Image (cartoon, rainbow, N blue to C red):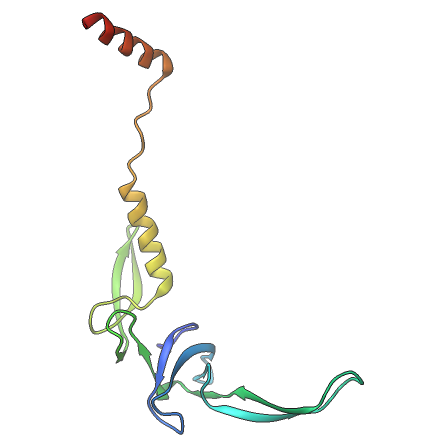
Length: 143
């Protein structure tokens, strides 16, 4: 399944065609996803306790995964998902990629950003206090 939890998707078929929303839940075995604000169904709820109130509740129903397309964060278009292998920490990692080249996996993006920050921050050169004092004294003698 190319759609994962918390992806922004566009519905491409059915009564809610053209609507966009965030994936709330996935069911890979059944091949279905639940999208926020799409395929709203009315359910009659009976009061189970004396303090509860019965009524009609609207909730999202599941739709087939083939009826949605992932929306790319970078280009903003609905796209078919392509898989690519990217090297990270000496290991090959399979990630989802848009046609524009943007990585769609949010977990991979976070890891890549953290790795970039570590590479940019060079560790400070550590010197012992005694060595630093002798260097400072040597410079004063030269002046």
